[in-house]
Length: 335
Image 1 (cartoon, one colour):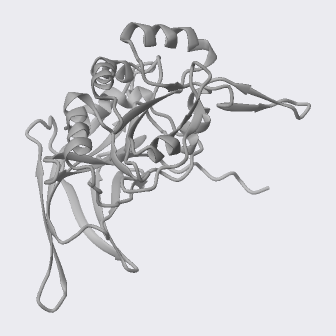
Image 2 (image 1 turned 180 degrees about the vertical axis):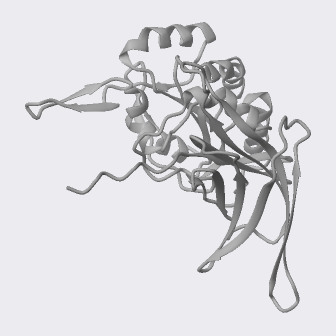
Image 3 (image 1 turned 120 degrees about the horizontal axis):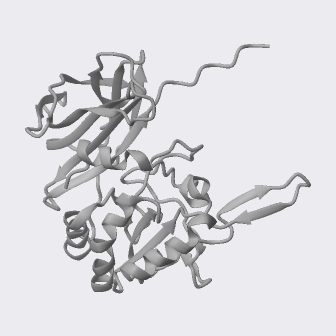
């Protein structure tokens, strides 16, 4: 399953940088998710988990073309696979302006799973202090903010214990991996890892990943690093430069208990440009981090970093997540 550079180009128009809660990482306990579906029924992640169900959550919208491209796979998969062990919840980021279009999409693709689009999604405080609620709410959707949604589609598989066991499930291959986990490896727990991205000096894209909880072993870890260059022609879209790579990592302990970490990086044959990506490790207290660094040729507007790993248990690639970075906002001058 690919989560890399090509997918980034497609999804770029459907990301935003809202005020957000703490990121939802692989291995985390999922945040609460409660809302009202289109029929007025309450939908609760915790209640479904309490019934012993895995729950697949899909944040989407009618105006998101990558979301719509997933529906021909997602809709029949749900109709076939929904059971005492599996349920799905859609969370719409549509606004009142796209509500009718959302209903048309639901009818066209035959979406039979509950879709949260409730009246309490987006509170608006009026000048007189009263509060009105707008349905959907777009990027200010209550659940979207609480789940730290920066781009869509954003998907999560939550196990019956409320743990995030998959992220960024895409296409037929991703759905097949999810089926295998639910049916054959229901006790699967991914390594818990946090990751982030930053721009340093306006020209260096840096991704970091906390691998402290990664067990001793051999790992194959696909990753992507890229940066966005705006067009010199006003009104035209710029381009992403970067590519996909694989990190081969060996984590061992010798007879004296000392740790050794061996790493090598191989670029994808599909990369259109050649970039040198440096991968190193560093410690912060008791935590062990990997640092992925790509130097741009000039100042850039935005950076991107994603990281996955190949799970022997599932025989497939699992996404730790992806992160975008922009230059820090200039400080306001002092009064």
